[in-house]
Length: 161
Image (cartoon, rainbow, N blue to C red; front, side, top):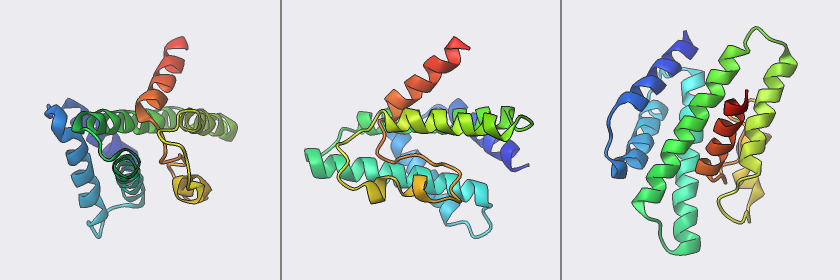
C-alpha cells in the first residue's frame, strides 16, 4: 500500500504543470508538509527527509561557495532529484520478488551514479554521506550529488536494457 501511495504521488507530481521557477519551492513545501505530518508513514517521511536535506544542502552550499544560485538551476536539480528517486523506487519495486542480491545491485547502481557525480568539492563527508552511513536509511545516497548528471546516468543505463 505504501509503495502504491508513493508511486501515485510521484505520478501526480510529474503530471502537474508547475512553472519552472516553482519546482524547487514546491518540492521543499511538499517535503516539509510530510515531515510535519504526525501520522506520516516511515517510507514517506524518510523520502521527504532525504529530498528536503538534499535540496537544502544544494541551495546552502551553492550560496556559500558561489555567492548564490539561479532559480533555474535549483528547479532543474530538484526535478532531476525527484525523477532519480522515483526511478530508484520503481526499479526496486519491480525486483521485489527477485533475490536480495538483485536488489543490492540496484542500490549499488544508484549509489554509484551519485558518487560519480558530485555537485561540489566535498569538504564535509560526515554531512554529505549521512544517508549512506545510516543503516536504516531507504535512500542511501550522497546529498552532494549533481542530480541532473546522476539521473542521466541511470536513464542511459535503463535505455541499454
